[in-house]
Image (cartoon, rainbow, N blue to C red; front, side, top):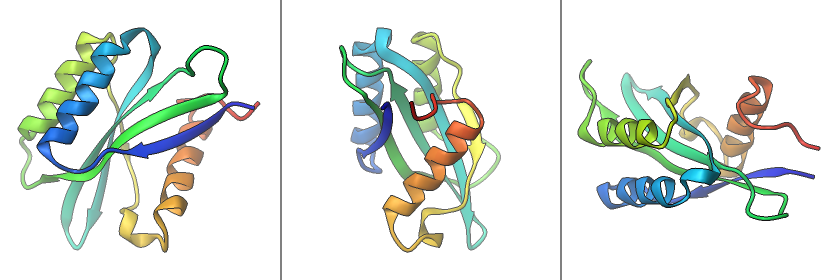
Length: 130
């Protein structure tokens, strides 16, 4: 059974660069990249994520995420978001933009990640459970 798991990297600049490097070095495994947007108390946060095909014969599809670390203050895109979009396009992907509930609306981050997984599966952005 193919299962998707979120691996949280962090929220800082270094974490975005780590995610970009993962995408570049695993370009052939990159399934899709995502930009998730959420709003809480009138403030918008952006998460960036990348899903990779399973390695070899495993049934593990990792989705690396930098959760809500990019604050959106106006209509312009932040440098971190632009870097992620550039890297995605260099790897042959156009990031999929999805609006989500903020993770603070969930009692546990596991519930938040189950919520995202459900949205991704329903929209055929990641494979269904097999």
